[in-house]
Image 1 (cartoon, rainbow, N blue to C red):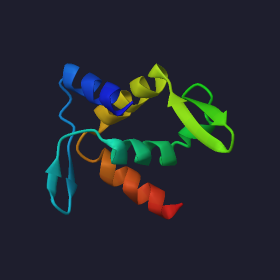
Image 2: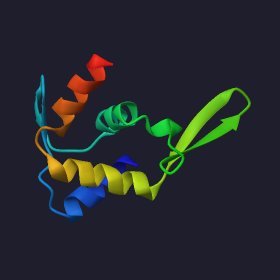
Image 3: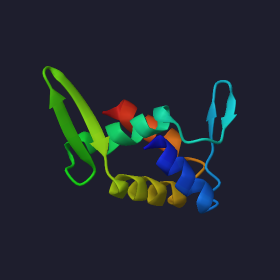
Image 4: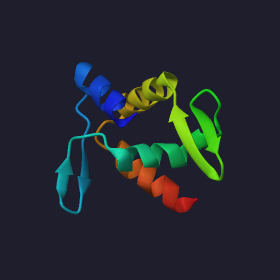
Length: 92
């Protein structure tokens, strides 16, 4: 999912970036995906996630619809989306 979203952001020339304690980042990574998953409760949304259960282990596969949704959300606010998601997730 990370590779798919990053590819779409680059293809659409979306200037995605955010600040960390070590400086500015310009890549969509697992940390950012995790913020989206938590804030939007993705794992319980059937059109975005499918749960696989093998024994006691649970894993998730994410849909292309999720990639489209994330890119659309990033487009709206490519420089502040990460900070906004972090703040919103802390309030929960």
